[in-house]
Length: 134
Image 1 (cartoon, one colour):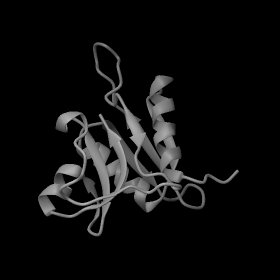
Image 2: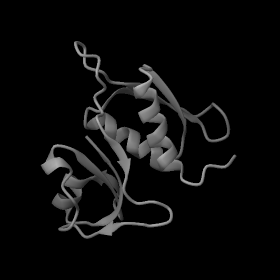
Image 3: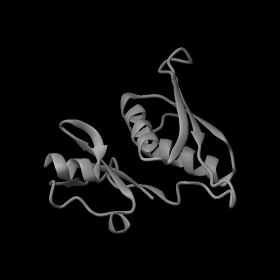
Image 4: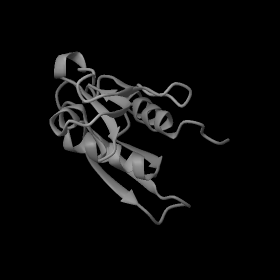
């Protein structure tokens, strides 16, 4: 079965792995998914990641999920898609939404590549709102 929205599939795999308490989740790779993974790592939402370009046709992304040491709760509370394949959501640099008053991040696809909402505002670029994380 072909996946119609690979980014939504990526987010769902991460959500499901966290709910099941898995340490590692494997996701089919693409350039955009690799960029999202790097942003999640830079922002401290995941522990580690590794790109395995030898596995399969497009390669795999192995993501080590991050949990709190004491409560065992996942670092990612909510992870959702903003722009869907049927309804794209674009925003200028000044209209990019704040995710829980700036505590969360919004990943934006701009002409300068994928970046967080804060960096997009700083660089004064708008684009497609991909997903939010907090």
